[in-house]
Length: 389
Image (tube, rainbow, N blue to C red; front, top):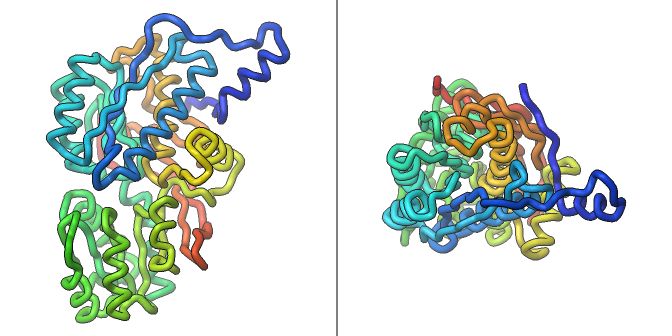
């Protein structure tokens, strides 16, 4: 297995080398740039996650360029706002592939947009697509790589803790699209294996304007805990349950609520659990350095979200390693070098498996007294994706 060491803040190495002088000074990159296109929700329903993806990738590119670029060439980003719209995703992806002729495309966020980008970038354009958000899994293509978490990685560590603490009767509540639906299908046997029972399964529109059905379902079915995959308006859903006096004693688990989103609804999310690759309370010097570098770049009140941010950061550095091993930006050659590649990232070692999904650490947190507390870290989590390429 191939590994490489993380440059946490490459600019620091550049400054040290310059101060010391001599042979260790980094040669600035030159020549034609390697171009990474990013299609992200910079505005729209998923703007929190789209900006986290973009900023984390930009941070990694800045560090890569400070460390000499990729094979001595500078790296350039072209970013496009898809506004959480599938049609815009297709248009912007086609622009990056056909007009800008980028070497790699990263993004987007939503599952429907992911499907559209896959068709446009990979199937029609023959380019590499790096998807860094947590998603439902299931994609299998030589030029498609997932750098986010997939359901089994997050659900397996969390469900037993919820059932031990709250009870075995669970309500599955999600937005009505593919990520929640497929994730719940993966969750059901895990719940059953732990002696749990699904007492309700409810889906509402992604942007619902009324949560009375949720309130009534909780009142009628009386679950011990809710496993929620309702990201866009989760605060509004919790507020409806709280107004109905149904939150007290009700367990809650999610696999999407990163630091930035949590801060806005901390009073409603007390005692809830969340499982994601990254949180600001993740342990280790690399996690702290990643947060320090991110906030130095974007502001002390800014946070990389728990799924796509660290995934995008890892993806840029792993792309650098794969291109340098391949000696080319040819998509097929780079794809071959990515498989089996390991990288020591902000949350520890990650490895690209033969399924083109990442083996990685999943962190589990609980909201206590208005802040996240690390419950446990689960390293080397198998994506459990049955893709044989």
